[in-house]
Amino acid sequence: MLVCLAGAASGQAQGIYSCVDAKGRRLTSDRPIPDCIDREQKVLNPNGSVRATLGPTLSANERAEQDAREKKELEVQARLVEEKRRDRALLIRYPGKAAHEQERAQALAQIDVAKQGAAKQAEKLQREHSAVLTEMEFYKKDPGKTPAPIRRKFDEVTNNLAIQAHFMADQDDQIRRINRRFDEEQVRLNKLWATPSAPAVAASKKP
Image (cartoon, rainbow, N blue to C red; front, side):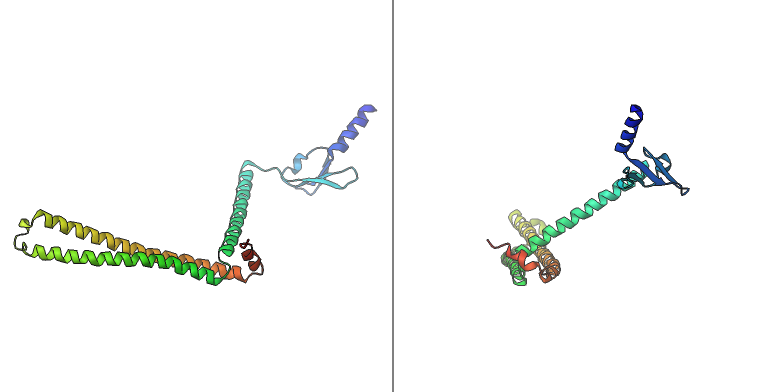
């Protein structure tokens, strides 16, 4: 009798497993049911209430697919969290359109200053280049007699002009990158500014 009572107590502690197999039969057992390994099993309390639910046992391929899905879901969630963080940072930095346009203007102004300096340097180099060409005219009939200092000066000025041209082209690329960045931000910010929570987020910038 003691053995029977102990077995009954153990069964109650473990619960009753119940499922419907592939043939539509309702099966119950005091342990996981092999015929329902590919489907959901319910763990019942002695009074018939559901204590827990066991999912189907997965094969190696199914487990790998499930792991891949879970990894993808985590990546999506992480990306959403990062997007929210960036959105909040944008709103704090640019509480309104005026602040955004002001920073764009400042960034472009810095490029403009650099371009003006480069243009002045290019003009100076062009004058030097013209002067060297004038000197080399004397040796046009026999370029081999051109003095070495004049040839070095010509090569130096020509190289510096190429450097300045490359620098100017880089500045133009930088202007396009700056405008592209601010244009993309503008599209996102227009949506963020239109949300009711935008003023509260922007206000959090203030001490």
